[in-house]
Length: 141
Image 1 (cartoon, one colour):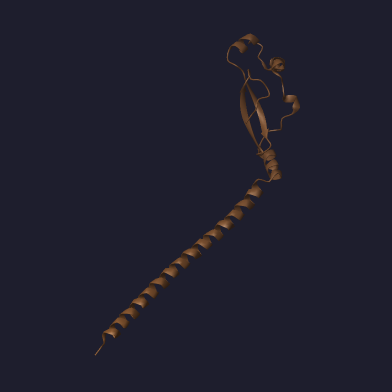
Image 2 (cartoon, helix red, strand yellow; image 1 turned 135 degrees about the vertical axis):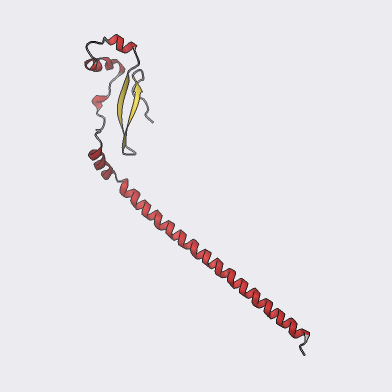
């Protein structure tokens, strides 16, 4: 006949085996999660290195200068292009048409001056529009 101590011992052995299996399974799941996290971190590091290399290649000033010369029809500003507001009338006199008097042009709408600015930090060119009544130089930031 089976004694009660044998039954209790068998139940404890079965319970400890079940507990050992569950703990082993949890450890394996955690190992897979850790492995996945390590792979994701390595992929992020690789992607960061690739992006940094691409950024340094694309942001190379010599390359950007070559592309700007090739595709943009913009030249850097020369010192002779800066004009005070007092000299502006004399510089623009040749551009006015002969049939429109200067007073009619000035009284109509305020004139607009287009100035090409070269941003040396970003190596890009852009247009900015300033009213003719503004004082030069203006901060272009």
